[in-house]
Length: 495
Image (cartoon, rainbow, N blue to C red; front, top):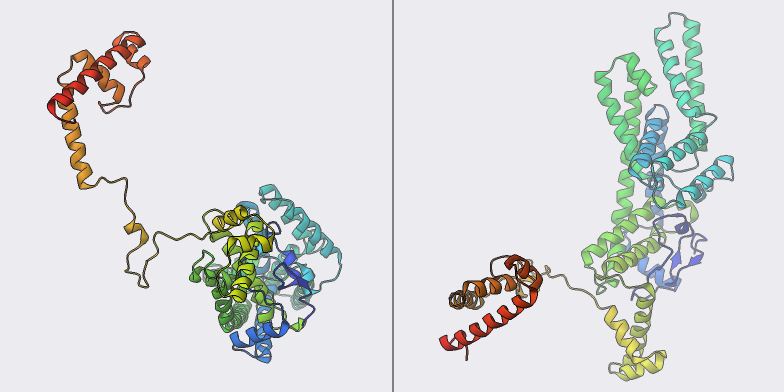
C-alpha cells in the first residue's frame, strides 16, 4: 500500500494525508454511518478491481495525458496576459463575493514544493484565512497584496507584462534593425522570467482557474477582431498572430485535460455506485447519494498523482465515502443527529446482528442492554432519535405516476362537505338566536365572541366601547348566554 495512505480515520478507512489541508472537511462531529468498514487491503483491492474498468497502466497513461494537457494550456497562458488577468479574477472574487481562495489554489505541500520564502508566505496567508470564518473585503485586499508579493519583488509579474507590451510595440514600429533585435531579445528574456516566476508560485492550478483562463482567451479572440494592433498588444502583451497560435495551443491542452479527466471519472463511476448502495436506508435517496459520491470522485481526480504509486480508485475511496458520510449526516434526517448518537446506534445494530446470527431470532431490548451496558430507556431513545424520514412527495409505488403520501394525508385546512353544511347551519342558527336578544345584549355577545368578523374582545375593551364597567359587561353577557341557551332548547337546536 502506498505511503500516501498512512492515516486511519474512525471508520478504519485509509485516509489521504492531504485530506487535513482542506477547509471543507469538518473536523468537529465527524459522523459514522451504518456501513461495513473495509479494513483488509486484499478486500479493498477486490472491490477496486471489480468496480473499475481500467488497468493501472491505462489509468497512469490517462492521468499523464491530463497532466500534460494542463501543462500545455498553462504554457500558452504564460505567453500572454491571460494569466495575470485570471489571477485578478480570483482576487476580485475573493474580495467582492467572500469566496474562499482555496477553491482555486492548492497547498504546495501536496506537490513537494520546498520550504522556500514563498512557501512560508503562503503558509502564513493560509493560516490568516483559516482564522476568518468569512472573507470580507478587507481580507481580500490582504490576499491580493500577499499573493502578488509571492510573484516577485513589487509585483514583478504585472511589471513584466507592461514591459512586454512596450517591447512588442517597439519591435513592430521601430525602423531601426538593432532596436528591433534588442526588443526581441528583451521579449524572450521576459518570457523566460515569467515562466520562472510562475514556477515559483506556491500553488497548482485547479479546474476553476483553467476555466477562468479559458474565458480570458475567448475574450481575447473577440478583441482580436475589435481592437487595433497596438491596443491589443497593450492589453494581452502579444501580437494578434501569436495570440491566435497560443489560443489554439491553450484550447488543445485544455481539451486534452478535460477529456482525460472525464475518462477517469467515467471509468470509476461503478465505484461510486458500489459505495452509494452501501449507504442506502440512511434517509438519503440513492440518486442523491450517487451525486454526492461523484463530487468526492471529482475531488480525488483533481488531486490524483500517479507518482505516489497508488491507484486512483484507492485514493478516491476515502473521498467518496467522506462525501457520502456528510450527505447522510446532513440530509439523512430533518433534524441533524449528533455524531455520538449515530455511533451508539451503530453499536446497537452491530450487537443486534450478532445476536440474531447466533440465536436465529431478533435481539430483545434486555439482551441489548446487557451486552452494551446501557439502560433500555437509552436504547429506545437512540433508536427513536435516529429514525429516518419519508418525503411526502415520494411515490408510494415504483412508478412516478403512483400516489404520493401527501395525497393520502387528510387536509385539515379544508372542510369536508359535511363540515361545510354544519358550519352553514350553525351560522343560520346563531343569527336566528341573536335576533331574539335585546340590541345591547346582542352587541355584547358579538363583540365578546368575534361574530362581526373581528377578533374577540376582553370585558374591558367591550366596556370601553359601550361606556359601562367591566363588571356590568360580564353581568349582561351571563344574562344573554342564559337566554340563548333557553331559546336554543325551545327551538330544538339541542336537547
